[in-house]
Image 1 (cartoon, rainbow, N blue to C red):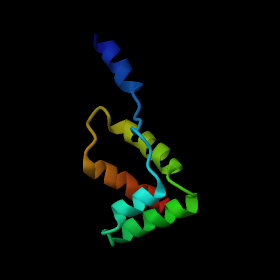
Image 2: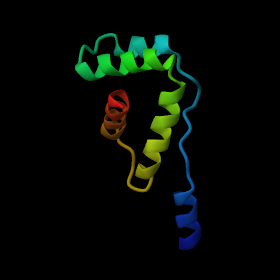
Image 3: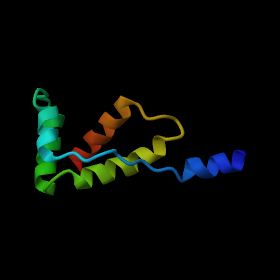
Image 4: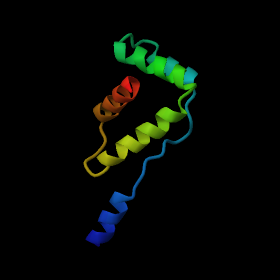
Length: 84
């Protein structure tokens, strides 16, 4: 059982339910005037949408599956993405 559990945990992946458009991201960031929010929005505009963000964030969060994914973890990954 332990080996199977390790295998499943190692091979789990994250997928976001539904899609999100750039306009929706703008709405979520509307009241956030932080430098990070502005950088993220600028990066998404340069990227031409949110597709790359969603794939990158899901991939980066995989390593946190064994220990748990908290809101702060997602925020950190969004910050890292916007700075890349």
